[in-house]
Length: 336
Ligand code: UT7
Image (cartoon, rainbow, N blue to C red; front, side, top):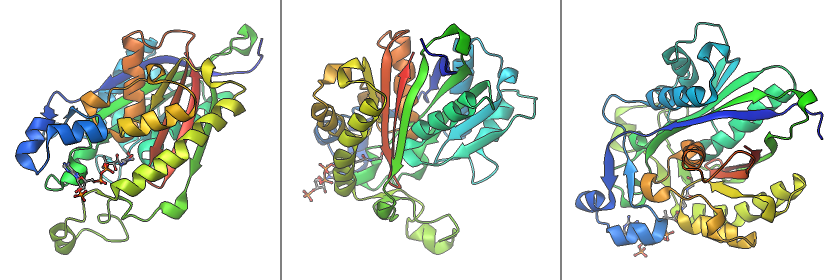
């Protein structure tokens, strides 16, 4: 029995736009095929936000679904952490826009955090610290992304990969006297900043390094650039150790993990590191076929789907594991 205070998962939620773009649709737009995209990535279709819909709209919807599942009134939250690299605008923060959309009237703190595709793992660890230390009782962690707004639809190497989504979790403090061992058991984060060159994976212009100008627009520098093969190699060389270190530091073995929820960037990356853990793909939640790479929304979207479909049940131990630009990575072991 543990006398520790935990950050328990009270509810999960997600939201995706209605508009579907299939591989066949993309084959009409760029020189690609359904077969290439499926075989190289596992993606079959993705969701794209309709005109006028921004990250905070998806984030607010995912958050209200998570609050509803948790039975928590938005005004009972103490903190909002929003992971995004596709904010509505550079400021105000997407977290503040979500707070307003939820009708929150209390002056609770709300902030964005940027760790690219690993942002949800980062947010979970931050929220865990705030709750365990007693600073907060209830924290909303939401990841809201519309990366298709940053996609060059003439670049076949990147435009086939990304989709839009949001996912959210409401975390609440457990009563240490109840002796439960639930919620976030352990998190481990890291970054490989020697690979932070924007040409490896990033959006070169629109920030303080290269402000928006007619030249940056003409040079297509507001779109995502990626050296796919290099990113692939980094992911495959980083994730196996990240996963096994996290599991052993949590005092567990791979077999204790009921379900692995990896960042959905490429099915081959998932297969590679799961094999290295000595596990098989039946232990892994995969929905990349339906949504593509939704950046930091990918892990909470998959978690929410797994919960709603009964693939992840109360008492199950799940591991989220993420990897993204920066390069950043994160892993969280969560008992539902
Ligand atoms: O979320 C953050 C993390 N991001 C990732 O984890 C992405 C990691 N990278 C990947 O998933 C893979 O590298 C990709 C899916 C992006 C690419 O797969 P790949 O097996 O590494 O292919 P490649 O980039 O080495 O390209 C192989 C060939 C090239 O042609 P040549 O040079 O061999 O003639 C490309 O031009 O495939 C070509 N190609 C395409 N062909 C048809 C690239 N994109 C396409 C396409 N359709 N969409």
